[in-house]
Image (cartoon, rainbow, N blue to C red; front, side, top):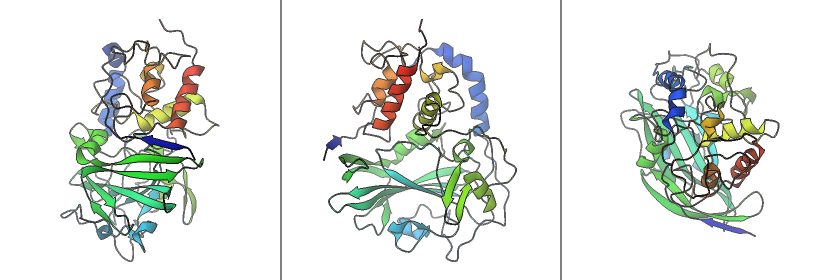
Length: 381
């Protein structure tokens, strides 16, 4: 078997690009940012599901010391069998996280629901809502078993969001609160039969805020209508996720019928350009947006902003290339001269992007970006 080993470290962001492109799109982006800052408190809904063994989310005492205290899951904790009212969800194109699999759930207090703000904005969640994301690997060695690494919670409290990071024990019987950040080595066999090794990173509170910041506030990233307007297989059948949320009382009805929906980045039926836009939206836009960690950079990778090739760096000259050969952020037809490709294809500290959340090269994502750059035919000035 082929062995692939990488180390974890944080990166530093790219230097600023020209402000002229930033100014050209600033008005539209500021309007979108303003819309996403809306913090509506959704009206109650008596149709929200209620479990026979109620989930326990006491906003006065969360985060709890252990994951089991919330009672999000029934039976053995490692089975991640959701309790009544704990609803699975999945974004159309997810963020890459060192090949870890993810299982996501949402829970809201009975009688409450979220509200639509805009296609591109996170839903307006009620106080008490919890977003639950579990990270795991299959075929972990030497036992060749599934190992859940961590469970991350975002809890809506007093109109804001708090983080709670839970690290699972080796016995897979419990996960305990740990916001300090740490590493552990994991070795697993991937779908191609290759033996991989990663120095897996459990994020600290500071690292969580790097990706989940909007100004000084904490926010979710994934649960936007543009990412949820797709079918998901539930225990009682397949259904559009937004429709499912509305049916169980977790989403206020009346959201638009037509939503500008992100495509799946790995769907060969979609255009190469749209797949790249979706990939960048998932992996880059949470930092490269107004009020975010890299908001001082003029590039904007969000799905709604990438109709403009310059927002993806096409024919944009870097002010400070990492190597002399890098003539553009994206040089059409030439990966060697494209700084964006260099950073996505790297696992080196100070080079790789995104800043947080990956240490391995996403080979499938790298191949997608390579094919896209080689397909471009623009002539740069």
